[in-house]
Structure formats: C-alpha cells, structure tokens
Amino acid sequence: MKLLWFHLMPYTDLPDDFTKKHASVWVDIDSKLFDPAKAHGMYNDFMDELEFAAEIGFDGVCVNEHHQNAYGLMPSPNLIAASLARRTRDAAIVVMGNSLALYNPPTRVAEEFAMLDCISGGRLVAGFPVGTPMDTCYAYGQNPSQLREKYLEAHDLVIKAWTDPGTFAWNGRYQQLRYVNTWPKPVQKPHPPVWIPGGGSIETWRWCAEMDYVYAYLSYFGYKLGLATMQGFWDEMARLGKDKNPFRAGFLQFVGVAETHKEALELYRESAEYFFNRCLHVDARYANPAGYSSEATIRARVQSQVVAAANKATDAQAFGQPSFEEIVEKGYVIIGSPDEVAEKLREVAVNMNVGQLMLLLQYGNMKKDLAFYNTELFAKRVAPQLRGLFEDQWEDHWWPKPLAREDRSDPRAVVVR
Image 1 (spheres, rainbow, N blue to C red):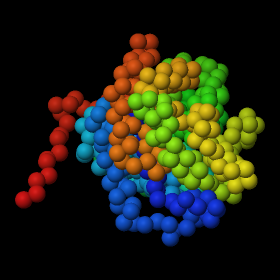
Image 2 (cartoon, rainbow, N blue to C red; image 1 turned 135 degrees about the vertical axis):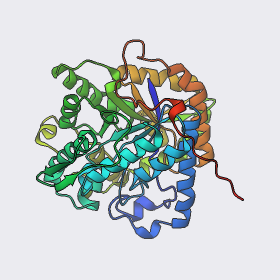
Image 3 (cartoon, rainbow, N blue to C red; image 1 turned 90 degrees about the vertical axis):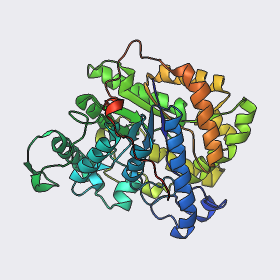
Image 4 (cartoon, rainbow, N blue to C red; image 1 turned 90 degrees about the horizontal axis):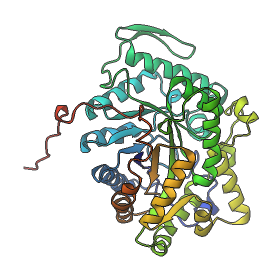
C-alpha cells in the first residue's frame, strides 16, 4: 500500500466568531480577514511540513487547487509542486490537481505538468479534477452545464499534447489551436500516471474505468460515510468488467496520532474543530448550481462532498456546531495511539479495498510543531504496520516511474557568501 501525505494549506487565523459573522468560507469570504504577512509564515510552515513528510519516508506528497477561500491557499498547486520537485529526492509529487476546464488554453497544463515531470526526474502524478462548483462556477464563472464537456475536451487535448510526436491542429468546441507542439514533454512515457480526484460522481467512476485511471475519493467526512461511496465505485468496476486491483482507488482520511488515546484527544481537538466548523463553512448557495450534477448522479442519489458540507454548515447554524467527540465518533478523524491508528487504517483500507491511502496529518489551525509530531509518529510507528498491504497480490500500475536515482540531478546547495 502507498502512503501519501496530503496538504490542503488552510488559512489558520480565522476569528473565533467567523461562522456567526460570515456567510461562507468560500467565494465571497471577506478579504479583510486575509493578512499577507501571516500568510508568509503559513506558506513557509506548510512547505516545511510537505518537505519533512517526503524526507521521513512517505511515498508521496499531495497538493491541490482551490480558489477564493480560506479552506485551501493553493490557487496554483504547480507553484508548490515546483518547489517540492527541487527540495525532495524520492517521494512522488502528486498534484491533485489542475481543474482542466479553467485553463485557456489547457495546453498550459500539459506544459507545466511536463516541466514538473522533467524537474523531478519523472516523479509526477497528474491529477485532473473537474473542480468544486465554488471554484469553477462561482470563482471562475464557468457555465455548470458545460463544465464537464469542456473538461473532457481539455483532457483529450492535454493527453494528445503529451503523446503526439508532431505538431497538430486542434479544432474542438471550446478550443481551436492551429499549432500544438508542446515543449517540454514529460519524462514518463506515454505520460505521467493520471489520478482523478472526485466526490462520488457516477460518470467519473465510469470514465476512470474507461481510461484506466485511479479514482481518488477525497472525503471530508471519513471512512464511515466513505465506505458506501467506495462500495458504489467497486460495484461499478465489477459491472464494467474491471479487476479489483486496490491500487485503482485512493482515499483521503484525517488522522491524529499520539502516544496514548487520551493524549490524542487533547492534542487534536482544536485543529479538528477549527477545520470542520470554520473551513467547511460553505454557503449552500454555492454548493450545487443547476446543471453541475449529471442526470446519472442525481438518479443514483449520490450526494457530493460539497453539498454535504454545505448542509452540515446550515445545520450548525440552527443546531450548533459538532463537538470533537462527535467528529471522532463519526469517523471524520481517526485518532489514537500508533497501534490503534494502524489497526483502524488497515481495517479501512481492506474494507474499502483502497491501495493509495492519502493522509491529512495537518488540518485546521494545527501549528507546525504538532504537524511534525503527528507526521513523525505516523511515519515511524504507524506506517511500518501498513507497509506491504496488497502488494503480494497486486501490482501498482498507477505509480510514477522515475529515472534511475543515479540519473537524476541533485540541486546545487545554496551557499551564502
């Protein structure tokens, strides 16, 4: 099983009364709450945490794209990934990812991902999310009814830009380009592995099966609610005649590790409550614009993560915010001693049949020293109990294939004279 360290980069200084005085953490959040000087410290702490995770042995480090919000401060994950490509040696650089319909032209994604694959020596995983409605329809003004069609055309253009050896013309509905001749091309052939982050769309499951891509379920609400979604994914794979290779699937889980269960309850309370009560304070107006969800997904009654978050935010206004005890009891966050966490994560991975396990070990307003503590305990005492799971039966066909270590360049050390 692969273990990946995932960072959302939340803004960590929202006021205590944020949910009472502000309607939403996304789209029209009050810009006066943003302090660039504090963000300077946050970005550098976050990048320290990602580099530490790679250094201490996680298989990959993950970054992602969001806009106009305090939930995640990465409008361009490629900027962070470029730094990681230079500052890490062996970990996969997993960009989860670029929302293709937002790029005009999308060949920009083909170029930047190819750059990242070259700089890292072939360690890139290319993620292509459709994107949340807050990011795509409200922050970037896309038509929700055309979003998926535009996304699929952009995907086809990016793949052709990576794999076509010559110059070609592109005449699509949304993009017309007389000359496409992407320089650079990626190291990995025919292209970096593609993972599709999603929240439960039927079409996304089918498309992942058709294209042989990884489906990565980025759950806000933990393994208990996630189990039904992953069961739906595997049922659809069976219906389409696909094998049950667990490396076809990824799952994201919040985790807090400490020496004892009691200590974990004390350490992670504040940051978990901050995330679930402030970072997910999404106004329901922005969660589900008409035309965003497909007919098949509506008929299957699959509820998106964003809609669930918005509904819970609305409920919190009427009935109060969930306590940490409720957050833990419902499985949003797995906490405990290293042995307790390892046992629970093994159970989660086996029950969901997930081979690419992504961990959120920094969340909410968690400070760097606690994120380091959580990460180090996980790497040294939880990860060894999970290593090797599934690998005696299945091969991970969706993992990067970098250049040999001796063929990769080492950055020159910076010397201040």
